[in-house]
Image 1 (cartoon, rainbow, N blue to C red):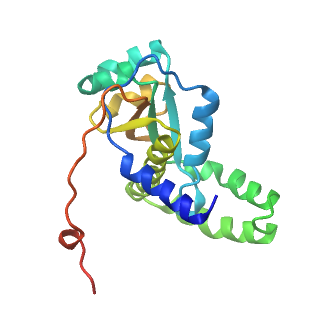
Image 2 (cartoon, rainbow, N blue to C red):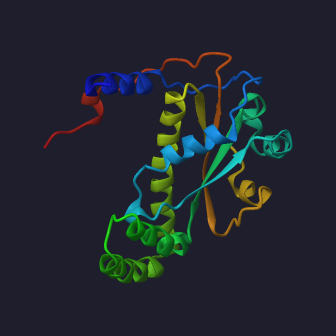
Length: 212
């Protein structure tokens, strides 16, 4: 496939993405494909590659029934989608630092001495960081992976809808996630559209950009 064709495919993905609220409930996404989409999504960037995103894939009828009263204004998405992915930011992301950097060494992406130097430099900084700064950081990184997941889903032929209107103070505990450690970011419903999403207008770049 030529690079031009790849660019055209990418443009089709970003231009065809819509926020879809009604899905075909008969369409189920396999765990294998969902895993593949998440693997492609986590190629998104994150601060110092700490990958502070965490996911709960809510796909069973029992789990959806548990989510429904917490997202009652988005009931159509919860009930008809193939799944709803709850995205969290992990405030204790440094717990995975050794694993991440160790894997980079194993894969030949960095030498052992660089790994040790970087961990020695970064871990004390992160440990001393106020909780609010950590929260801001993980929200940015989790936002990046969420957008990438929605584009990946469209490339796989599925539709999505980012949901911010839910009881964020209750969703972590409802699904066995430590609410003190995990910051709720958004829910993302995913499935095959039963009703197409609406096109929406965008502000002209001249209205939102300044050149210096």
